[in-house]
Length: 157
Image (tube, rainbow, N blue to C red; front, side):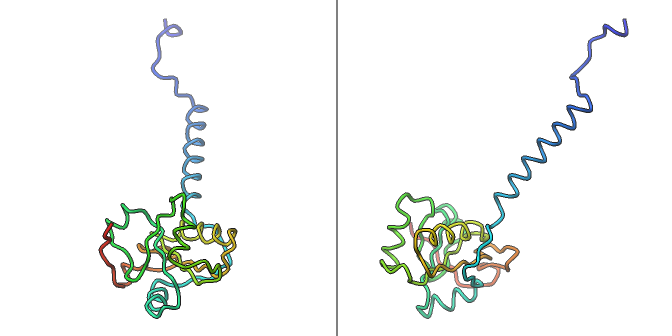
């Protein structure tokens, strides 16, 4: 009867290895999506972005979502444009003007989205796009706007 006994789930070594490989691939995809793409465009620290925005040298644009703006506030002196908007370029031009050489600095939570939008704006013809890679919450690039004790305003949206 030993050969005809019912078994529980058939967890063979091969199935366990396949499941582990699938999990690793999923983690790899997740991890890769959370890494900023590499680019050669200018970068500013959060502190430099604050000083330059206050001096009127750059237009600081927070590209996060309204939910994020509500949760943590927005960088003082920034303009909020949700990067998911279908009319993102039009909204940016309403803030920065039609000059594609206007200095526009982008900030997000941790520098991933700002790097991606930096590349997209460069593809769209913008010639003076600046990334703030440490973002609001900090990243490998630095401590971020909030931990840097830079002024945060409440979002009124």
